[in-house]
Length: 383
Image 1 (cartoon, rainbow, N blue to C red):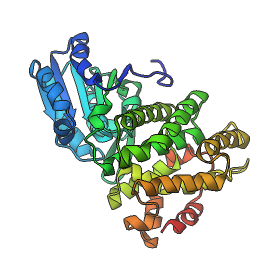
Image 2 (tube, rainbow, N blue to C red):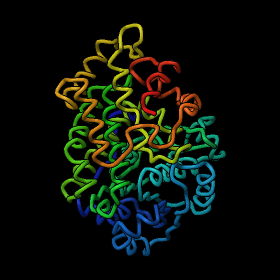
Image 3 (cartoon, helix red, strand yellow):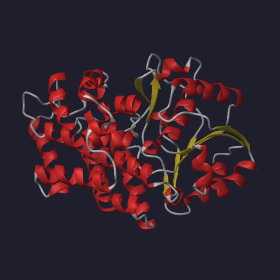
Image 4 (cartoon, rainbow, N blue to C red):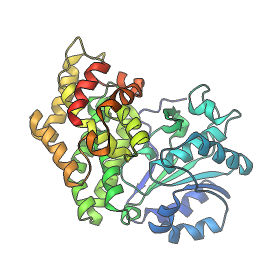
């Protein structure tokens, strides 16, 4: 099977693109459909008005009851329903949780074994499963552009990865984000913003991923505040583009330390994912700027990392570290999201447990090594 890097699904991005759903289902000869949907998003985004006639003309199985941040118990319920119906196509509608859930159900449901074995990596996906059409209703996670899906088993987060998890089609209609309240708009936008930053410095970065990241970063800096505080169709469209580009970037590079630390903050303190990542992205930027040959994780060497960090600083702060850090903080403050761990309830005694829960795979993708002691010193000032 070809590597997933540089492979991207056909994307119909623009206002009104949802109206192409019937065309795609006909193209796929899909007479039976499995729909994984965030039910409020389906009802209030305007999707129902367009999709109801399309779905009513087909045998459609609905799966709408699942938690934010996909849980293995929900995946298992979805897989049982999926296996009972064996659909011709899977449709995902919603934010990252709905999209990841659809990927997990389609991927695990098309195998013979137990979903938990695939979700935790004990077994590898073999059968590709039916084609997937993804319809995002937020601008942030980039899940529609990636070949992996997150699942939680207890408090442990796993990332199931396989080329077949990449959707066959993406209908990205920014009009579906117009009803999204300021809070979710801010949190999802910060996810795209942080992904674009991390993908630039990631060990797994390439020239291609950096190109996507830089474009996503510039779009986020110019449009996220407007999309949250005084949304316009233009800002919503720009953030949809930013989110998708950031997703294409992390599909190649994967994420790093801020994402790795964020998962436990989300699970234990209920902080929306993108806002949780943004809490530490500035601190890790400062840490990574100190990279040298002894502390470098990247086999291309410290100088290669510094060149990419210089690109990041140029786009964030005209080359200045302090300006870049200030700009990150100012953006987060302006869209009414927390900038300190203490603001979300984290106390000094919580830090060792949060640090102990960090995904080590993501840490190895961070360009500069970091010990538990260094991370503690880095995060204490954020209390």
